[in-house]
Image (cartoon, rainbow, N blue to C red; front, side, top):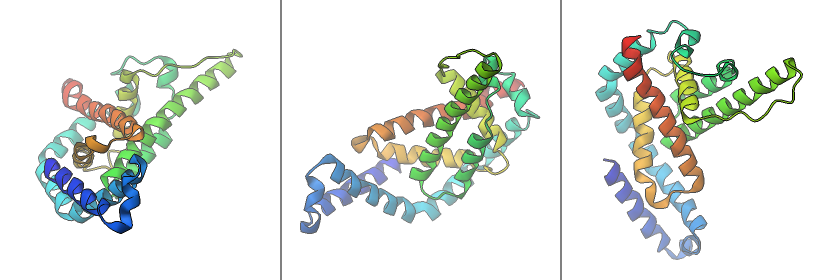
Length: 217
């Protein structure tokens, strides 16, 4: 399905760029990306009703399993105990990040869902920086830059998923929706999209945690 969508997007973009009124689109890669984004938004918005119904229906058995795994942890504190985070990262206030992730429930376009995941990861980084500054202030020290590893990000994303579980009852469907979009994008990816794709990989790893480690919680 993703391959077929990619072929349709590419075909429509090529045809549009051949139109005399859109000649400007073929002048630079940036101009072409404007047309690509418009076509993708139109196509994904058009297929959304049937695609979303298919994703939510076919993934519902797995969604129920994931929700049961999430329920194994009565609190964020209990979940944090599963990870080897230093005190600063464990103390990071993730309220804003979790609230942002919950906004995904109201989005139709995978482009917007991907940007939400990107924003969530940026909010996590900011929360860690704020926690580091707070600790440095309490200790009256200059503090320093806190390195955030991929494992750290995965752990804190898992906490955000846990906190937003009540609003994101179809979280696997949302993840698959974004994955389909990313599968159509390699031919015209940008630096910003590549960054967002990296964050999506971290988000997917956070979901996978509940399928593996949580099984024995």
